[in-house]
Image 1: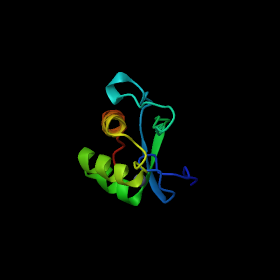
Image 2: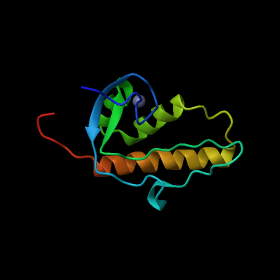
Image 3: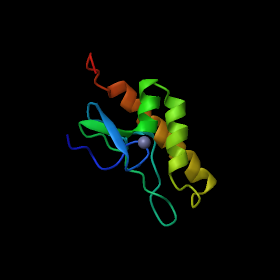
Length: 111
Ligand SMILES: [Zn+2]
């Protein structure tokens, strides 16, 4: 099985599994908006058919731990260049995107 090279939650290259998910737009109002410009980071977390996950993120997904997943993913991104307001938006975006993931995840019994 060929997996996406990077974890869709935290960008780790150590992908171990994937989750089926309906497509959704992570830049929707529900997920929050990331300001993109000089000095700001761009986090594109679009959903395309499935989400690849590393071992760490998979644990949070299996436990349906939205807060734990968002905290862990945030710790994997370089947030040192973000202003306080950008950091707030980034957290809203991460949490909102993962919330949409949980809501749109397609559960297949026996997996
Ligand atoms: Zn991950």
